[in-house]
Image 1: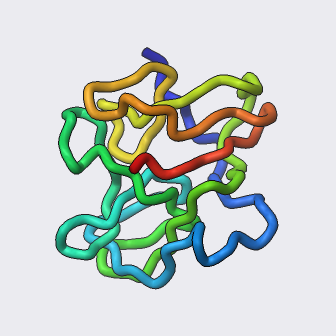
Image 2 (image 1 turned 45 degrees about the horizontal axis):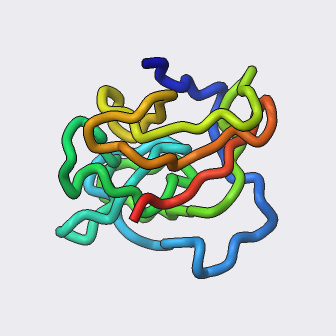
Image 3 (image 1 turned 180 degrees about the vertical axis):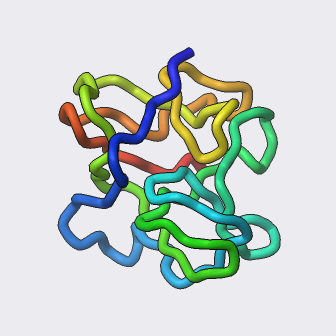
Length: 131
């Protein structure tokens, strides 16, 4: 198991994503960092996804396009490219972490059993939702 560390501040780097790939203006239910794998929970709030268990908390609706404090509006994007790390190996798949909420790992977790990101260059990921 190897958690994928963020290098700098992750940010979307695709051409302008379509509305079908964006959830914009939703309020957060906790602090989220740019690049966190997130979901819109049953209270209609953006929270970090968590792969610790095979529950609804492991569902990913998108990745945070920017950091947001609890209660602030945020934007999630999926099926886009993100500047994310350094030294990534193109082709490497990533799963939702079972130990770092909103994080990614090189191996599947109990709740994160599907690939949700793939390295496409030494610094960029292609990210997608998991439902």
